[in-house]
Length: 388
Image 1 (tube, helix red, strand yellow):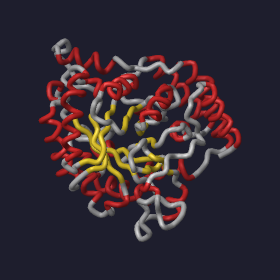
Image 2: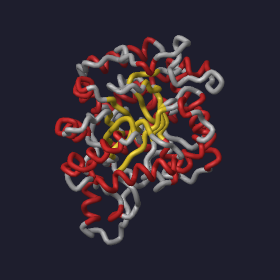
Image 3: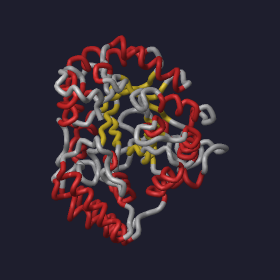
Image 4: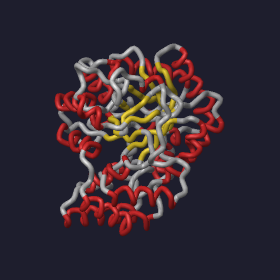
């Protein structure tokens, strides 16, 4: 990494007065122990590409014993949620990223309404179980608006069994309550979902419990109220070029020993040449700024998505998820770890931040999707039956 890039990172961290620094040494746990110095415990000599594993960075995830790759794999794309995909290629993607150092995989029954878990389960049949950590989710299921969310205890426990069947596994490392802001109220998460997940944990079907959602304050509020230990939080589009507000909560999560998982560094397509899908909930000013940044990148011949992923990877977070069912794109994402930005790319990234991203001042779409969901439940939009 060039001095220009490092200076930009340091300035950003100091300006916002975060107590967590890019150079903070990760918490060491037994999972870091390996007979070969510099390799994670998930490394297997006859399976991994050692050169790639040595290039990957690994961080402790909160107070868990998981030491996870800085870049991790979100299996949503295997469910054809972004575009039609080739399942055979998806299998190759999973094998490729794990062999090249990615050791944390995230999935959910919502992604393709079971398809992502099924395809991932097929991929995992040829991958040693000790080479990866895996998480799934509960609470979000079907596209029909009245069947989309169910956070009740009975459904939560049943969901885990369904996921394990699709994945072909006896247990997962982490199980998370999915998009908790859509629950009827937060009490059901506190009083039903999390206690049910604790039973799942006690049964040996999961080792840790997490929560996910877009509103970062809500994640903190649940941690404050829960009598069940919540080991991880996951949020998306909140540690990317146009909104890095997740970092404001890092001191709290660090103090509580909660692992932080960042998702969607390209902000669900906003920070790509192709642009966001029609359903993207961002307001027009965010879409406009990101589109202008994309145009600027095309003019000077740089890849906006590479800059966006680089930006997120340089933040002081344990891991960032990317999702792709394309082998070409998966390799490109790994290059963001293995191949440093050129001086030209570093300069372009800083120009984009100055011109298009920082003026947005972390604007977001925090209530947009929840309000649409509530309206659809009330039958206020008879022509719409699905969310997103």
